[in-house]
Length: 107
Image 1: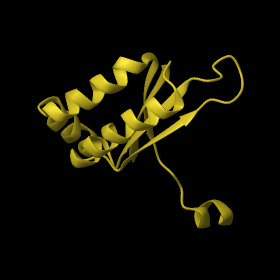
Image 2 (image 1 turned 180 degrees about the vertical axis):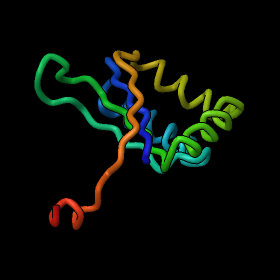
Image 3 (image 1 turned 60 degrees about the vertical axis):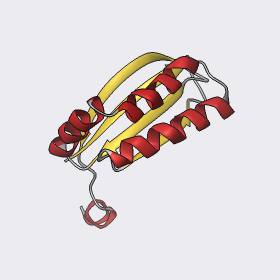
Image 4 (image 1 turned 45 degrees about the horizontal axis):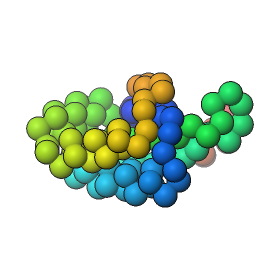
């Protein structure tokens, strides 16, 4: 089952958030994440907030990555860069299983 760490953040310009999360992505992938995606909420009461999703293959990969990241000065620096321009609005952990399209289409 894949796992995602999702954080919704307030603040920061588009350019600043992209630059900061680019550094965070590099560190996250070095420490075992599958990838990092940033997007922006476009409608509703949270319009303009940033959504950062860091994906992991499973809970074991998530745990190993968190352990490695906690001891990595580059990770602390990258997170501090994101924290300097935005604040955490809502953190979430998501464990989910994504079905292949063929399975969904045949079911």
